[in-house]
Image (cartoon, rainbow, N blue to C red):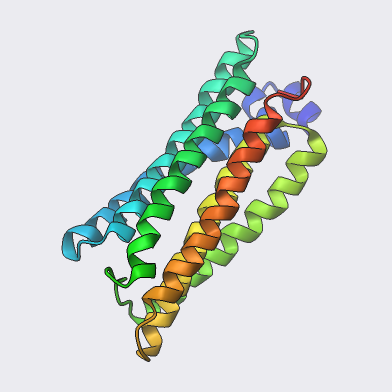
Length: 218
């Protein structure tokens, strides 16, 4: 199919049909969504101030920044800049580690019982759960594909999506438990958030270590 597109002179179609390039474009398309998600979470913070909600908004902005790095690295790499992909990969790993620290700190008040999470309606909770599982599933499938292709930019994009999906899982648990109306679940939410923080920090650490491996595909 890419060859057909090139024969027709539609080069951008050929680039989109390539899995690695397609993920670069999808990464670009996802940035406004991440920013919009952060804005929505900030609006929740204004209505009901919570360190946990604020950290969720910061995480969405951090993921948007990492996806922007994918675009910049792709452009620099195609202009012949050496090491552009690995530099972006290393920077994104540092962003994920920083976000893990911030998000982990936001879970402490929940664990200590000095902060609470917002209550969600049935429809909102189901919507959050559906988006969470769909995003996490797509990210894991894409990550397996990127590892097979040895494409660092595609892998970076998928790892950011996996991390965002893990945070959404915490929000999903928070929303679903709020529907039950049975007791105070802040400790469970804080514990779930802490577990996800450990996983995200592990992802960031592995990414950082991978930048010290031999040359990979860019």
